[in-house]
Image (cartoon, rainbow, N blue to C red; front, top):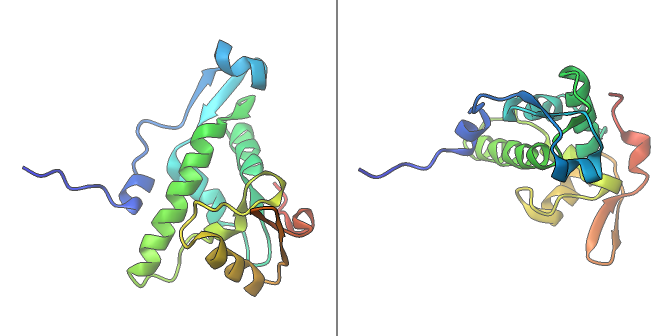
Length: 157
């Protein structure tokens, strides 16, 4: 029997018994301090990303903060939040390729400092085009691309 790979949309909807709040471990505490960390469900990250309106932006750090508040944790897990944003982006792209129009606007989710995520579907050029279509100016610093004055466009969390 051949195992069929899960689609991105199936991965997005597979909560894997998440979310859960756990104590920050010794390894993490060096960087993140003491307290608790929420490991979100993929769909929670997608829900936050989905609600960013046209012309507005959000960062992974803002998503992490919003998840921490929601779950009364000290921090949102940086690793899983980033991975689940990536899963959300691919699920949205997959849905768009199927002809669906109500997709998560993943290109509005930036990395720290307004950096465009080169690992999202379509790569830098596609996201650059989508962001410019929404009125944002993109600048290049070295090999990286950023949204100019991105802070002015961040959603309130």
